[in-house]
Image 1: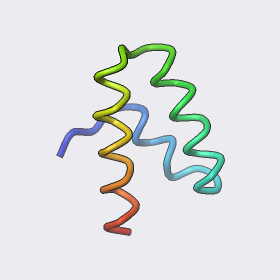
Image 2: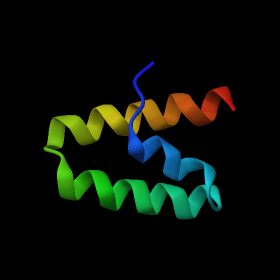
Image 3: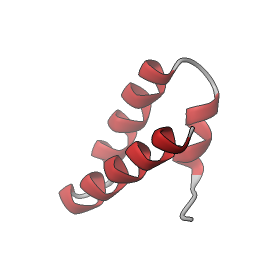
Image 4: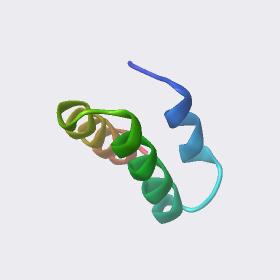
Length: 49
């Protein structure tokens, strides 16, 4: 499974705060296609617990 620095952010604070931080991070550094892909990966990450 793909992992990078943005995944580490998910373990620090609350889920909602992490989503906001990661979303802001990826919208700044990524193009639209990458944002959609990572959003999908986040949904899988949290569905697995």
